[in-house]
Image (cartoon, rainbow, N blue to C red; front, side, top):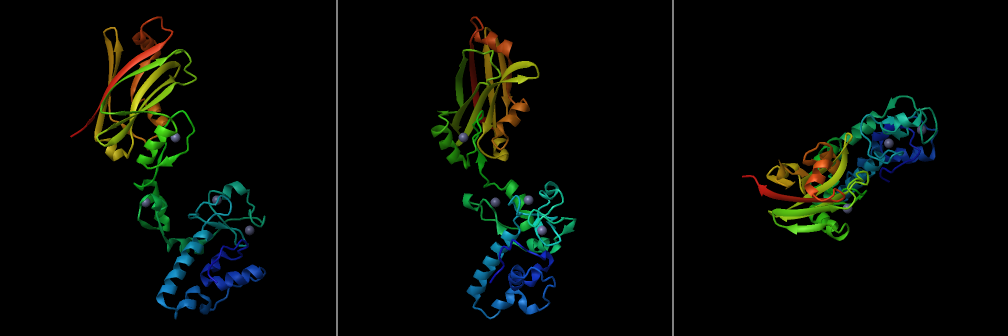
Length: 319
Ligand SMILES: [Zn+2]
Ligand SMILES: [Zn+2]
Ligand SMILES: [Zn+2]
Ligand SMILES: [Zn+2]
């Protein structure tokens, strides 16, 4: 009896005239005049209902409108401009250029018709943040929900493990357990470290050697990345620290890294980057200790057949 997702929806612009009309249209798609009768508005059915009934129905209306706002092609929520074919099938603006002017539902020519009624209905919707399950209690108007969700502090983090296509997401405690259990990452307590990186065939930069160590200090978690990559034509190593949390908190910390041997030393001091920034983004911005391979082999000593780097470091909290 309430708004339902109707696959064969002839008149988007008559949306406001209510569910009865949709049901009619579904069974008689040749009818093209939307009914004028105000009595057909959905809400009028509930005018004399007890309040709790009306409340429950409003929730159902919202979730059904939400379904109507789902693009039938990509299944994403639609945002203005929402398009429709001359038969009223709706389509998101992202999918429109991809369907070669054919309505994906009825194969008729798509043209350039906007579905203003649905756009307006969407504007009246208020929905919970999609990270509700992660603890966000915010309720947002449909059109500002996306903006909030992009910045929501409860949005989960991606797994910070580099070098694999890991798709795990979660909050920090969950990811720490995941790194330990599933990636077998080394975990260390404390804010100072002395780390040895050994690799037997340092000339294979292409098979990028990367390592991740997690440090726990100040009640927080930090990821120390070490890897080989190609900087232009030059094979280099980079080491940098990422903070397991948001950027505004990452800025409260600093860290230093040192590598050297034979009386030479390279020192890097930096600010850990949030794991919101991908490992690749941090690496490609060179925001860390970068060691040329020749220098790395020199620091390794011996016959240059093996990479043996000792990296020492410290993390501290800025006042
Ligand atoms: Zn779409
Ligand atoms: Zn169509
Ligand atoms: Zn939120
Ligand atoms: Zn992972």
